Image (cartoon, rainbow, N blue to C red; front, side, top):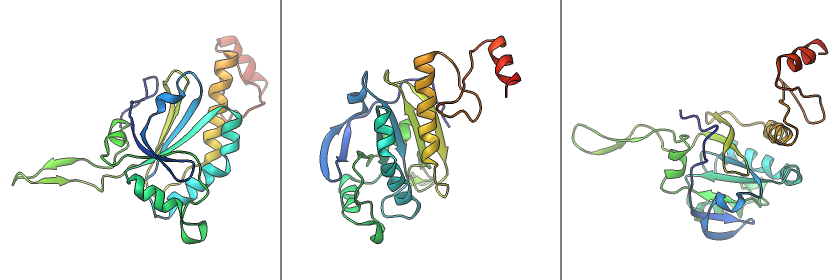
Length: 210
């Protein structure tokens, strides 16, 4: 598993569905450079079980991300047509109707591969036949990208393990606090709590008061 933290987020320009149903041919995270932080997350498949709970959960908290000037963008290896179809179905049908943030179509699987969240790979067998060693869909990867396009946080879950959206918000808060104040955020830090200066004295003072 590649660690992308501290590196430029891999570039892509591809098809996506935005605003709950509009097709875009050349969607890229470059549009946010210098303007917004980005939470870019992968999920395995449309029309599944855990995935709609996550997509709806991100939508329910979208206002919190927007308050923090942070874009939320989803991605799976399904086609843009599949994304659109899923967006037409309500919650009671297992759909994601009402989701408004962009959903990227990584149909050729190169985005998931470049972010190193693709479950499996291709290989040639002894008969020179192309095979795959897994289902070739994305794990539940999440990447927090700053305004310079640098990955500052990443976490990857296996398919059965849904994410905690509040933790993604907490990481946005921690990153923005560090950027604005130069102080670092200790374990279990939440917005509004004390942070600490990145010095031996600062750490000692923090530990003595907690």
